[in-house]
Image (cartoon, rainbow, N blue to C red; front, top):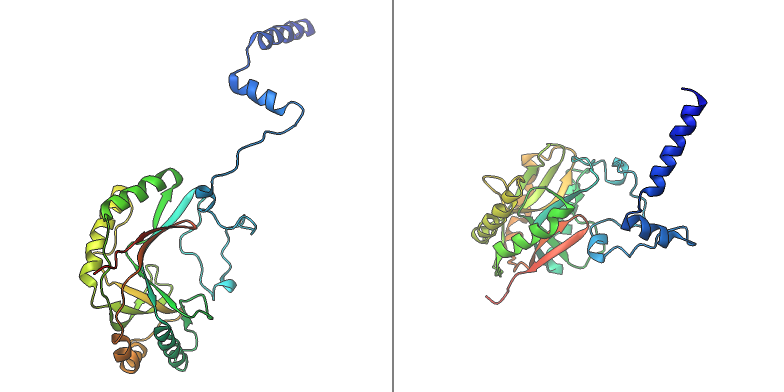
Length: 271
């Protein structure tokens, strides 16, 4: 093209841009930015911030560091915008039960040095036990409120119940990369099944995997990257099983953890 053609084209484009009116959003942005150089956005609501880790820490690199987790690695890769969700019943055990678990840990480590406690707090004065009622669920942000509302509607006003542990068992995770020593629920199994039916119904509505077909309700107390032998489990059961069965518990609440936020439904303890 000649330079005359280019000049004509430039003039026509300039005329078009002059005639085009600014959209309301463009006008607002221009007005807001005038003299300030930036847009003052409203603060992020707390209910959104609570879903994410502490912003003061560096979470920009989601690369698992096994050295910080006794060799464990993330089995489900982090995906931006996905919120890992897990539902469990929470039981607060008394100090005496915590002392019993510490004695069991000492006993186990004389036979299996690579075993670790599932409790993160070595200085705790009471033990918080979790009994899983879901597999790992993945939710998008726009699904969170509806999921929690549906779950509350399905659960109604759940009552607490008396439960106890029947035996020490050995389990593995789904990827068979980690072994667990767990306490299997005896008394209270029927009540947990009733809660699970309601939870599975809601989980299915969101096309997420429901719980295991033949559930073994339990709380994991120790883990190892090495295989835990049946004989170790049997020895622990023989030494500590009767003492564990002496304890009965009233579960406190049902917890649905979505990202870093906990949604809690209290269990009515007026039996």
